[in-house]
Length: 194
Image 1 (tube, rainbow, N blue to C red):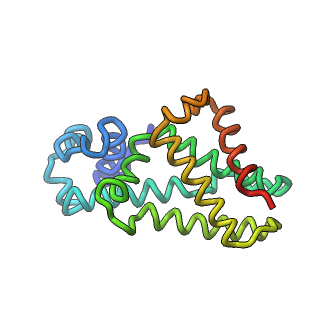
Image 2 (cartoon, rainbow, N blue to C red):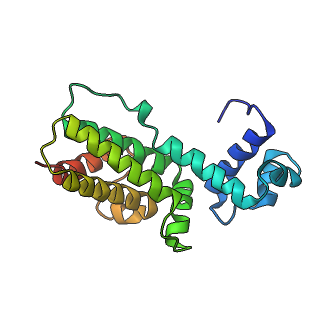
Image 3 (cartoon, rainbow, N blue to C red):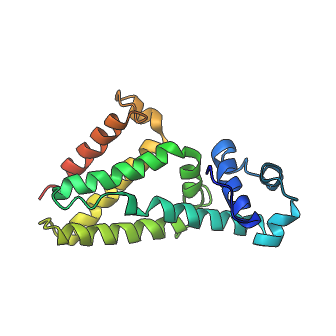
């Protein structure tokens, strides 16, 4: 976020992300967002029509970024488990870096009890794509078992971000990159075994 935003709209989006991270989902008010962005509060309504639409746009952008695996090397020589561990380590790192944003993604699912959220859509798509890749790479498990394992790994990674004290209780410091790698590697090796 060190580059200057290209437009007022982009500045509002980036500021909203920052406010969610600093103050939590409920603390990211229109007033805080507009003050931090250096814009009139009416600009939020002008560009997004409502705070709800702004939050929706921020959630879309950040989920897209969270599940954009273009930063993860393709690792053609790696085992299926090594590649999968690298992917989940990348997701976990993002969650650790932006814990309140991660919690915001779970808000509608956990607080509002909405049965089909944007997060669930992205996770389903991610699981489908990763299951196909694992099959292509030669994993010899039935597709449904691969999908279940991926969902279980994702759930364990999400809980590590949502409730880090549970993981810390086991003596694991997820702020340490080596500990994150080890945590994810153990999950993958236990759940994705042919």
